[in-house]
Image (cartoon, rainbow, N blue to C red; front, side, top):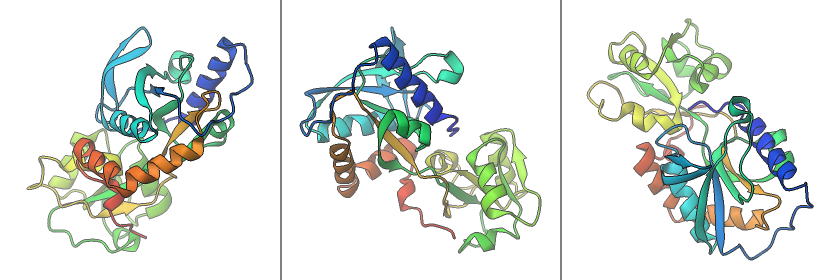
Length: 271
């Protein structure tokens, strides 16, 4: 998953919202959630968010983040209203439509994002998972990986973690995409691939006879968070309580297994 400039996109989106609305003072958060909530999405990875855009609204919305949003809205005691599109400012030079209260749009915490919206606790990790070749002894930590031939897709978090956190003794192999990366592991040219944890379940799905089981995860970033509009009248503390409830009762894990193929939170850390 490529999580590029999420904070910048969010900052531009909220700035656009303020300019359209004449930059009114933000509505103070309320303990009572509005009866219906409008959720902003950023379409991209179909397992995370998919749908059809019509006039800035998203219909037939589906995917992990969509279902997390629906569960969160219900846990807040509200009803899901519209889904609207948050378009990355760097690509389309436009922000989110006016009127959203929550945004689930592959947002990572950043100074720019915090300046324009309240940010929740993470609802899913941005860590990187390790997928070994068949027959490789399960690594107990990062040190066990350093002597191995490792690989990742070029330009991904996996490639960055290889360079910054793992620092293997041999030069890693960088593949053009997941198909080539899977081939490197399947043929033994690479001992283990590093892939975003949210993609690991799909990476190994259908290839159990060719790849080893996901061996764990390496810390990377703070996770993906919900942005709460400063003008939406929604209490960010209530959002965090609702997310905590969804995590505690297994809802977030169940949705991850359904849409992502595994629950990344259940992978143990490699340190």
